[in-house]
Every structure is written in structure tokens, then in C-alpha cells.
Length: 166
Image (cartoon, rainbow, N blue to C red; front, side, top):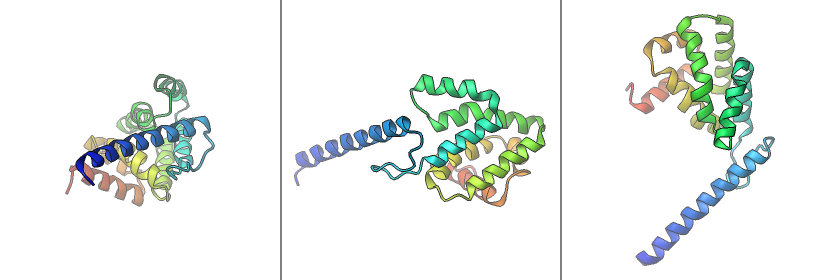
């Protein structure tokens, strides 16, 4: 295969991949009950459940949640978690109040940490919740009081992945 053919093949593959991503996104947002997509095989039901649970923990954020979807034209999990839910969790941890709610949230985080959904854990939970908790040592120490063993392990892995600890 010469370089010209290789370049055309690479461009075709890139365009094909972008089209698949768009199809995935379109399918995902057309039918929120979809569990698998044929192109990717992602299990998105768990990430939807995660967002719903966060809304249950923080019902006052529902307006911001809806605005985010409206502004972006779709559900962007990491944007919503980082910009809407994590500030609420950080606030609770920094003020050391509403311990029952924090216990419930971190019990749920432990459940998530033990689930078998790699997409939810690796692409959503670790890169948003766990990395953000590790951004501030004081917040992390407060959070560790509520973390279960698997959540603690994943948080350490997230910090290692960022090079914060070796």
C-alpha cells in the first residue's frame, strides 16, 4: 500500500469513526431507554441512572441540569457532573454538614465503584467525581471519611493517573 492509499484510508476511517460517534450520540439522545448501541456496545443505562441519582440527592440542581442539556443540545455527563453536582458535594464536604446526605452519596459511590460498567467507572466517575475530590487535600480527607474501600482504591488510581501520587 503506497502513502497516498494509506492517507485516503486513514481519512476514510476517521470520517467513518466520526459518523459512528454521531450515530451513537443521536441514538442515545433519541431514546434514553437504550441500553446498548450496535456501533459501540456501550452500556449507557448506568450513566443515566447515575445522573438521576445525583438529581435525587440534589433536587435543587434540576434547573441547571436542564439548562445544561438545552445549552449543549445533549447530555454531557462530565460537564453536568463537574459543573453542577460536584460543587454541591464539595460544599457539603467543606462545611462538614448534612452528614446523612454525604453518607448516602458515598454509599452510592461505593455501589458505583463496584459495578461492572467500565464506561461509567472509567469515563465518567473516575475522571469527574474522583479526580475532583483529589484536587483539594482538605476536601479529599473529608471525603475519605465517607468512602468505602473500592471508592478509595479508585480515587487513588485516579490520582496516580494524574501523576499526583506515585
